[in-house]
Image 1 (cartoon, rainbow, N blue to C red):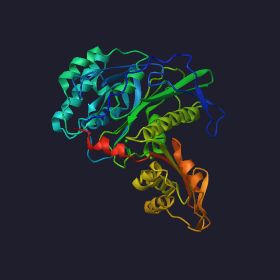
Image 2: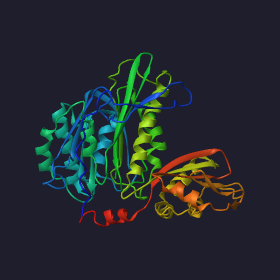
Image 3: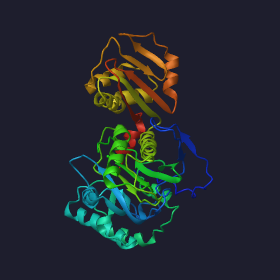
Image 4: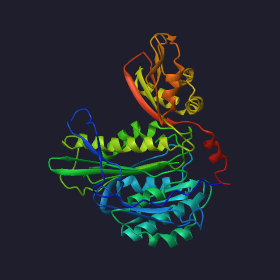
Length: 432
């Protein structure tokens, strides 16, 4: 049994859709405007679209083939799975992004094109060539991404037939967000906007992922765009910094995908001089990219297969940032912790177990463990358990687990989700 098809894309967002803001980052007094209905086409210079190609099921009307295109050559960078088993699209896209220049992206769901030999490489290259012919650019300027079942060849005849039917438009980002979904229950998208010295810049993003999520760059996709003009070496730094603290800090099931891909395209359509770390717009741009990635990463964790709750793990007082990150990720990925959260079980000992398993140094006389705002262990001893307060902290849609390790000042945050019977059901019947 397969997961039910997601609904078709909603109507295009209205320009007057209400937006929200987030506090400014340290170092500059500016508030970013978050656009909840924003996507990759919120940034100037980008269009997108998608079509139902029937890649997994010829009878389905589910969107499963999409294009993202720029109206000019873009600076572009990417990060990919560190798995030693990598899909053909990852191999081809690494090669195409070596020059840090791109005009578009072609992506499909329903078939991952992984473990498909030389035919898989040829199919990924043909997908790039088909998109390039549509966009009027060299095939080497097209990024390719595929997600779905491993070990099956792409139905190229369906892709060839469907690609000309894709209607590209500035409102097509939402359709593209739907087309990349597999077991996701909803599309993941956001944009952020800010202005510096009279120039308005936008960063947009979409993502997919619900299972096989434990990125190490990162099945997970994150596609980002900006209309800021950014030199390639600085764009790469921008992406790596954001991915490190967002996509690489989530886990659904501790399995790293063979297809994980995150890309960032910069069109420069906003105008103005190139943005470098010396430019006054650089810090706001870094904050915008981080905010978009953080939102998408949290939504991936929240939408984990079968999940009912988002788990946020906060580690403080660690000896080093690396140890804080390791402890946070270990807690968020622990099946025992995830199962306890699902059952509203205030078993805080599992948090301590996971911290210890991570190898992070701790001072048991100074450690503090909390579920929500309830302190459960402090000053070397457990505190009397207020079971009702603790269970109440576990019942909400977002659960915060915190541990101060008592040995330093480093901190980290990771995200995960609870472990439910539905996760087992989805993955027990994924191809049947």
